[in-house]
Length: 61
Image (tube, rainbow, N blue to C red; front, top):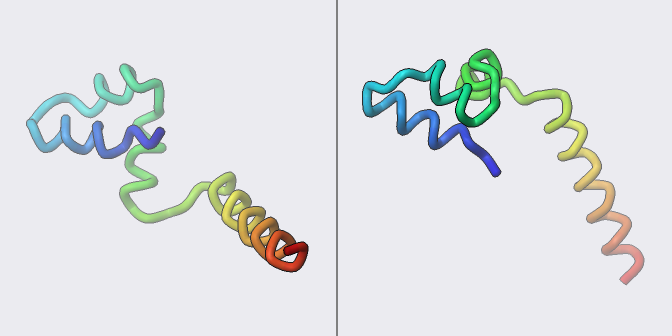
């Protein structure tokens, strides 16, 4: 589940981002990194794997 929209809502409501990140067990640096549009290495690998699985699946059908 993507918790970042919930943290963003807390921030918009003038609540503490640090506390929201603690509650959702994500680092503040990860929250701000995703806001900047930088994708994590894991996400990039997952996207590549999904593309490969889709390609193999369409050939098998």
